[in-house]
Image 1 (cartoon, rainbow, N blue to C red):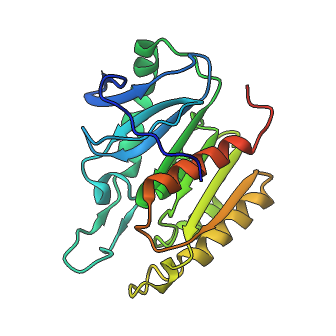
Image 2 (cartoon, one colour):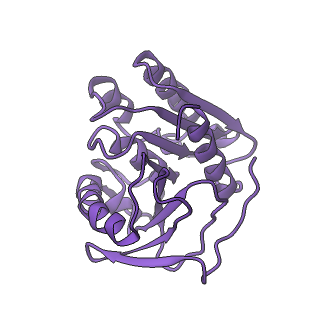
Length: 231
């Protein structure tokens, strides 16, 4: 996996747009921007260089990153309330002002996330054409109805690459809904390939919570490599 380098507070810019504080690290104002979903405000992130990075905070994952209502995944947890459309709308509305403030004109945008944020990143491809790539590490593709949704729904725009990963022990979970995550991720990869999308699938060692930052960084790099014509 790629080397993990932590951001330092002095290098990271905080930009307010659409009543949200985003955190940005810009290397090349004309290069691709990765929008990393699911960071809590103030949480340190990684930035290995080679592309532009904007981290997007999320206060309530069960609300903001779930595509539709579904029962809670764990006893004592919160039900999924299906707020992904609203969260994505607010993000898309903020992007023009955010990129104008940063002074960037990206050649492409990638959306990326881990776990439920990985599912949200894939869901976004069906709802907006702002993103041409997605990276989903240990994405919650077990989510009720997602594969059926993907099978019947076209992408909103051109999708040039999708990178997926899952841990080889994630299917050993005691949670019956989540046991299918590896099979579901493989099935989603196959579905996207039938639509002519370049897909990278990686089976990582370990369970769901094994080295999430490095796993996410790895799928971001994989999504970048899928199209060697990227400028």
